[in-house]
Length: 554
Image (tube, rainbow, N blue to C red; front, side, top):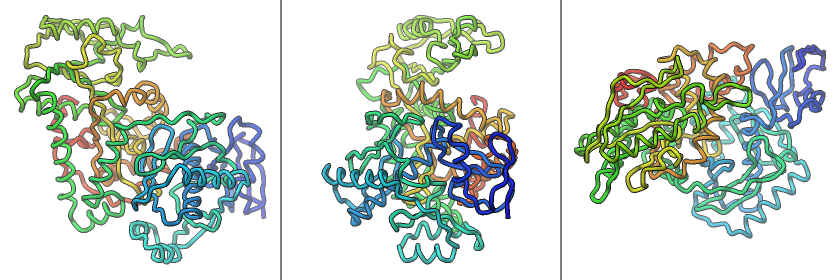
């Protein structure tokens, strides 16, 4: 029996029923400069080893895409875990967080591995790569999966399995006889994983891998100690309150204890924001400028408002000014290679004027503050004048806040750079993390729908450009921050679910981003929903779901 497949070139071809996407991909591999690492069937991202049993539309995902690199890293982690189980089975590993183009894995049972140990692990892994050791795609029913997890005493995974329908067939993978379940497709064999290195790092191991699409050489691992410290703090705190996995969050909600976890999470934010305000006002400090920067949907606006309140409590006078009002006039705005305006580059800001105003304000002069008219592309002066006194603190929010060029005229002792991000500690289990970028994308999608009349389709289509700008203009400067504030709330995944699911379901199957929408729906399917009514109106999460006490400022 044959099936008819509509292929990437829009041709229709018959294949025997049971043909895998990997076999189909061989007919198209020569059309691409990068390897095919994942299939798409009927708009849904699918393992290349999946057999096709019905007519449908086929497409492919390449390694040099964000989703393609997810497949690469997921498979690389599996290879590393198998090496650990083969050579050092007494070592317990948990995948923690990304550090640039590297993955930090913590050793959770206190064992220390030497550089010699890492070399042995790396050599073994490279042997499997050289042999193109198969990563075997397997099916398992729910009952068999429960039995396996019971034998392995993996309570969180077993509890998470309860969100899966009883009749659903699950996908698992086997490498050298070791079976694991991963939330997402894997590579067909280890031969794809040619570039990586293992590095001893703190209480664990960093797996360094190439940047997206760059497979000719491995970049030098660049440490991010401030960012990693913040990840560790959040991991330890969420573990302490027993809410570091989706299964634990689901249990808290089902047992009626959601109010408590919300209050504790919000109290942590308030405590940390108050501590930042205290640092600004402590004896011997002379801080009159606070620069707040962070990627999209990190909660910068609400953070700035809450920090301002704490500064007032401490007897200071916060004065907000917008970096957006210092955009170059349209005729001077830099352009991208395609001729469109580049509003995200630092040169899009009139650096000379902004620094001049900072210098004069901090010297006690009165300055006329502009208002940028985005419709005309001109700066306008509408009578706003500012004069600072010894109690004034300028609060400036903008994506370039950490870039020293923005505030070069202000001495370091007179300013504080704050980096805001949503570094989620939440994971599905020891090896399957919920990525920070996914959480921010869900936040942005919900906010765009609530306040900007954008549907999920538009948000998803714009996301690639947003991420490109972050990688270029924000992330390279994050270690320049004096303080990193994590805006993640351990319970927010459950609140966002209620809003994001209907938005994601509205994305048409004919759109390229439908694959991403379905991936996010699959992720959300594992969490129990939580209503927003319990969330205080000054919560950072209110910036996205509505009902914020700061809505006038938003």
